[in-house]
Amino acid sequence: MIEFRNVSKNFGEQNVLDKLNLVVEEGKITAIMGPSGAGKSVTLKLLMGLLKPDEGQIFVHGSDICALADDELASLRKKFGMLFQDAALFDYMNVFENVSFPLYEHTKLSDEEIEKRVEASLNEVGLENVNQKLPNELSGGMRKRVGLARAIILEPPIVLFDEPTTGLDPIITSQIGDLILETHAKRNNTFLMISHDLALSYRVAHKIAMLYKGQIVEFASPKELKYSTHPFVREYLQAQLNLEGSR
Ligand SMILES: Nc1ncnc2c1ncn2[C@@H]1O[C@H](COP(=O)(O)OP(=O)(O)OP(=O)(O)O)[C@@H](O)[C@H]1O
Ligand SMILES: [Mg+2]
Image (cartoon, rainbow, N blue to C red; front, side, top):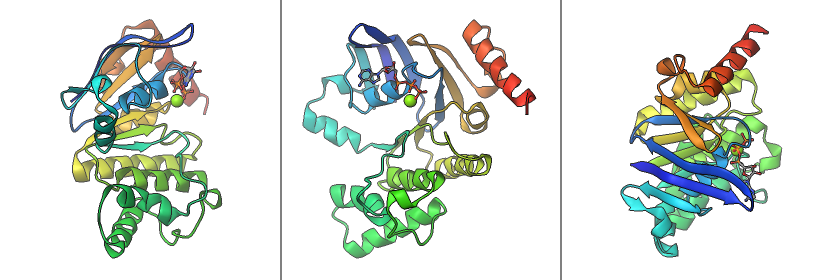
């Protein structure tokens, strides 16, 4: 359903992705993990057509998105819901305006129907009485929730999450984990999530892809990942164990 085939991406002299291959299964939750600066966010931006690869192909539902014209790309983007690393809410719009934005942009629903959908969607992410608040009047966890409500409001078949829990306390982190699982169980859409949070990935992901030096060096279920023989993966898992051990 989503396939990266030999995808390379450079910024000037810097080679970020180096013939990366990855197949994301339909209807599953896939997590991409890897060191900071490895190119995880770049990978999602390539998938949404916000960046172009220097080499290789990216297939979404059978079409190579790199070969699409601008209008085709725009309609492809409707298949994606995206929760950006910083939630990327419009600062000057209140919560209602942020969450309703995709509905006004892409549907012909009446104001009344839009209000209902926004309310249902905010309820789904556990928010109430926040319609009039501006993003800077919300906590980090609330902003992520609003971002998630906006990402799923068009019921897209593919939802992309960039660091859904970074910077949040353990309780909110666990609630976001619940939300991801609940939202997925309702619609069985395809989730692709980037996270540094191994506990979250173990809990929600069907498959974990490890990005290291521009390539996916391991692609395994959480259970299988523990038996990885790749030196970087071993180091990454050991570092995590050390952190947990020091608690
Ligand atoms: N638009 C851009 N122009 C130039 N360099 C960029 C651009 N976007 C990303 N990079 C570089 O590509 C590399 C990968 O960036 P990316 O944001 O994908 O990292 P990441 O894996 O998401 O890291 P983190 O875990 O810290 O979010 C970085 O070295 C970054 O500086
Ligand atoms: Mg990133």
